[in-house]
Image 1 (cartoon, rainbow, N blue to C red):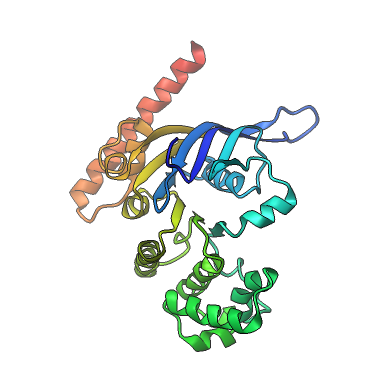
Image 2 (image 1 turned 180 degrees about the horizontal axis):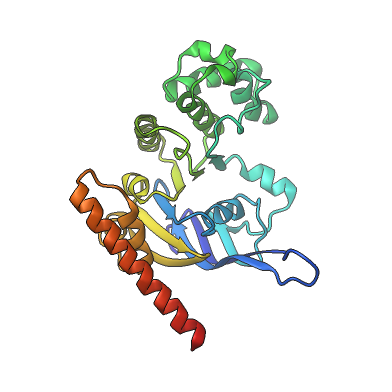
Length: 286
């Protein structure tokens, strides 16, 4: 795909089956999409759809059984441990739980400086970079001397974003980065992601189960169902007028403030679920 920063082509991820002679479990089945420089691609699906597995495969943390992951023209599907460490300069991640992604025994400043120290950045330069990162995510400079437990969930997620930005990556995998936050904090963190992208040109793979969040963030959207890509296209189209019944169900699952409209959504979602069950039954008996 010309002009792409990252290309996922016919990706398959399998894990060993549980138990003696159990067949392997296929978590991802032949998924293809690409991410352009400075673009956000939303990866949406319910729990167990394979979206986090794809993010891990891109980062070299899940086994690629078939297909390829190409970054800047280089096949990174099966990187050596050394090459995977080198790729962290360009490929970073923000996880769902900001507290577990930070070392509770290190100050915020030490956590932010850690990737810089690994790269042998001089101490004075690293301290200056930490101050710059805190300013970028809207935290005061004295936050560097405090511990993760002293911050709220939203503030800790800002620290996690700052850490991901430390090495000036070109792509950040955002794995459910706001799902653990309350709605008001979610809005602030999403706005921060957009501001950082506008300022730095970083690209995002934005993984979420929430179609409303994906609509807010994404230029293009990929919809996953049971490890397969069922819909792919412009974000405003996929999130407002989806073609696939599964995406339609995801859209109808998003709450609306009007009780009558919400009741109609429930009825439509039930109808789509029954239709899908009937189609699955027919496919199984064919």
